[in-house]
Amino acid sequence: MSEQSSHDSLEKSTLRRNVPLIAILTVAAIGAFTLRDVLSFDTLRDNREALLAFRDANYVITALGFMVIYVLIVAFSLPGATLATLTGGFLFGTWIGAALNVTSATIGAIAIFLAARMGLGERLAARMETGTGTIKRIKDGIDENQWSMLFLIRLVPAVPFFVANILPALVGVSLFRFAVTTFIGIIPGGVVYTSVGAGLSDVFARGDSPDLGILFEPYVLGPILGLCALAVLPIVIKAVRGKKGI
Image 1 (cartoon, rainbow, N blue to C red):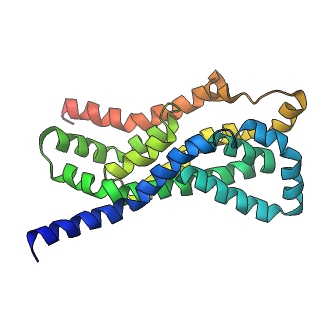
Image 2 (image 1 turned 180 degrees about the vertical axis):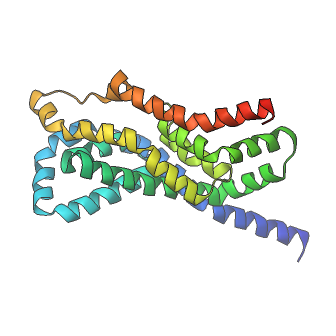
Image 3 (image 1 turned 120 degrees about the horizontal axis):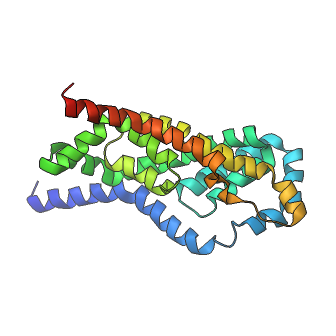
């Protein structure tokens, strides 16, 4: 096989691996402009009676349909993830709603993770693994503290969900670790927002909008920051032991 043919074959293989990620980014860009006004709180408020009536008549189908829609929203990074979480609470209550929300969000996150790893992730992780100097030290540092770092980026509210899905794929995190830390790490915030959704009937009756800033209230943010501290603790202990030569 000639050098040119080998090069063309490599380019085609690279393109095929990147197709899922390109599709996700394309749909995300289109959705950001076309669905912004459709997937809104006003849409939920205006259709609440029809949604509740359909749920009462078709509970299982509603739950499954809701999960499919939630997975697609997360997998393609479409606007409306927060609204979907609220809707889960509104339709199914805090605990069942939280279970559906967290499970759906995890499945959608895994889809993005796999797409990113199939495309850029495998090659970038391999380069970091065989690299030297600063790049190699960064990769080794990530590998030594993967569990802590993965839990931390899920618990910290400031880290965008899309970034938390893509970044692990680019540094060679295993699917198992990603799935476990995603599922467990999003539970606190997921339960909080689902509980807000469960109280939407009263919000609608008052003609108000839901208070999404509740996540930053001291009585909610405090425990989440405590979990963040627990996630960081192993990293701190390793650093201290390293300095003391233990």
